[in-house]
Length: 187
Ligand code: DGI
Ligand code: FE
Ligand code: FE
Ligand code: FE
Image (tube, rainbow, N blue to C red; front, side, top):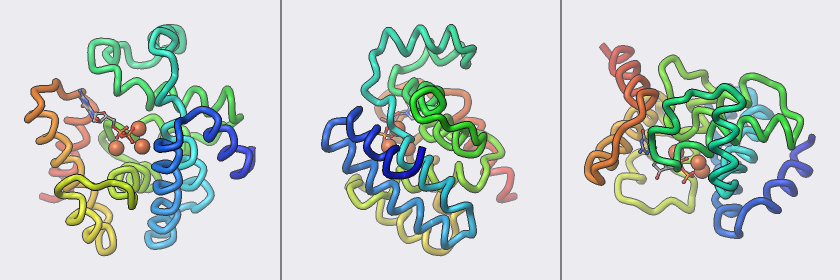
């Protein structure tokens, strides 16, 4: 599937606001891929498809997590986490994507993980800073993203964890492993 076909597919799956967010992530991810020398086509395709499962039926997502052998711990955590791994699955089934780098960037865009690839980092940060994002702290991550992707990622992951703690939400192990791994790289 080319970028136009993928955009059309996603436009049909998402409400207008979420589709606009997706276009913001695409623009940001392509800019970051150029800046940091990542595969621009992979970053663009991952960005287009990253939230494709955001409005997928919840029971069906639950079924897919079980039947497709996804991390069973997902079911014990907030259903907001499900659209990332389910999105990677749908990217293969509905968009014919088989490139591991693209699928992993979709799969880990919500939690992050230890040892993220360059494209995974780009999608995580682009999702966080795309022009439509307004929350407090986003501006600092935007600034960091121009200079140092690693620092921007670190800041975004840390702020996400603080946000979850403030909401008294449980933190998925991959999110914590991502944070710990980033802190280890800094030492
Ligand atoms: O899909 P988006 O809104 O563009 O953004 P996202 O996929 O990065 O995040 C979706 C939601 O997932 C967001 O409200 C924060 C939440 N989230 C991220 N990591 C964790 C989490 N929720 C829980 N409970 N635990 C996590 O580790
Ligand atoms: Fe998402
Ligand atoms: Fe995110
Ligand atoms: Fe998103």
